[in-house]
Image (cartoon, rainbow, N blue to C red; front, side):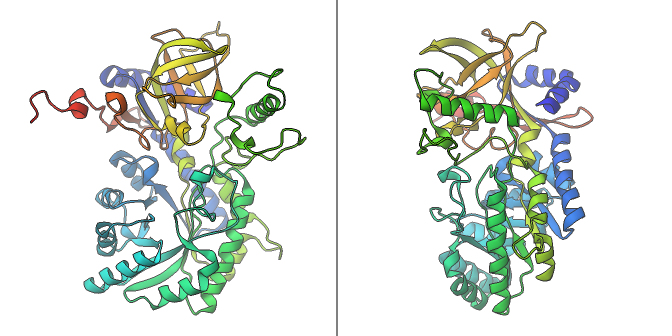
Length: 480
């Protein structure tokens, strides 16, 4: 938050100009923060395991501007559709630096993968068969990673955002690894390059990565025993962001647990008393485990990569040493939200406030954005009323949107604001550079999607998405 406040202050004039030109709400992205975070990942890799590629997940901020920034930084890309692949190629990302993911790749996507020479993370048997046929028709040999699931990784994020445990639509089951590896090895037009996984989003606990690495080292050894050369290993994304401080996070958990233990003595801190990570926990347990998504991590961003590489396994060797023993395969790292989220803010206007069961609810004009991930699981995005004033007196509030359905709560967790806002004042929501502008953006209730701009270090402003107009949503008056 402090860095983003400093950037908002330093670029105040150009941000105000962008607001005047494009209106509110507006997503603002600071490219230098993306550069800083990318450099942190690269520095860890250079120090501990130089044969590492860092990828930008296009789905986290899907637009040409973000891809151009990634290409300038020398990042590869992780694409999840033929559309993302096309954009990456058009913006100059080399095919050798592109990993193509997805659980249900279309024929068009597979053809584009074969034609481009990008690396395919093959997800299932049907996809393997079609990829093999397509490659043979073109006389090509496509490099593939085999994506696996079924590692003991439940509980490290919300169930519907876990992508490598048992209940997930992604990947081959790890307990059939020998059969799958043999099938890939025999597939015409396909070249086995290594193994892949993605364990979810906002994985805050280092234990999850420790388990993933242990299983992947085992997979690599099994592949090697079959005569397959493991050239690359993709540990996927999920690297966490500390959206709040350690003190605030632990304080929130303490207040939530107090409310669950004695509703009459403690105030609500979640909308409708959602238990979040304490769902199913025994309130009488003196130290119940938090499961699911967490919003603070002891090792955010590149610090988690550092831990992954330096973690010592039971034999005393670090992950980096084990990788060296395997012939130093290229390590693929996709920071996901930890690369992009800290670089963005969302500016919006307050429309009013009210009390609901004694709780302050602040309504914000925000259309629909991925702050609506609260429809899936409650998210925590810090916010503030602008401008900050010396006379500010902090208040706690839930943040609500304008959409005509009950689930439109921008924050189902009480947010500490610097003061109670009045209608027409501006709020800033922090760390929204990943997913927030795009992932669930729609035209619900006829709202146009907000604009998205990026501010360079020198103050130059680039439009990453123009605000939609009434005509974009409803069409011209005389449309037939």
